Length: 175
Image 1 (tube, rainbow, N blue to C red):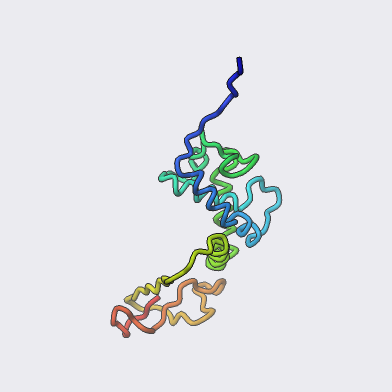
Image 2 (cartoon, one colour):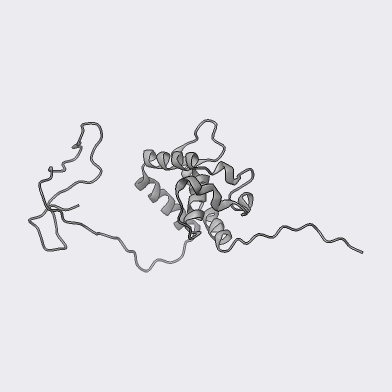
């Protein structure tokens, strides 16, 4: 009589599919190359971002300090990689990941990830959508000139200027 192999069954839901798409895009490698390694890290920034994507698409809203609990009972080594455990996905690691992404420049990183996704899935493109949303503001604001700073340390992130107004209010500054 043949013995039945010892099997472990996990309910992945959609997470296996999402993890596979993230792998096909090469998101982890793209992020790690863009951000660079941190000495002594057990979970790279790219892998932490992959975990954050899986968590966000797990339809769970919980504080960052409970981040690792989402992965309890899930096969993290299959979803994320060998040696990755829920204990390594703590709020400190996720906070460092967010800081690293911000310091590296999220807009530039998004462009690199989008290019990787396009290479991974070269489907025909018939149309592109560019969101040109603008918001007008009321009140007294600075000119928002290039390089202007509010404290003198860093350039402002949002520049308020006059320009074409989709709201038909050319008298108001917008961003």
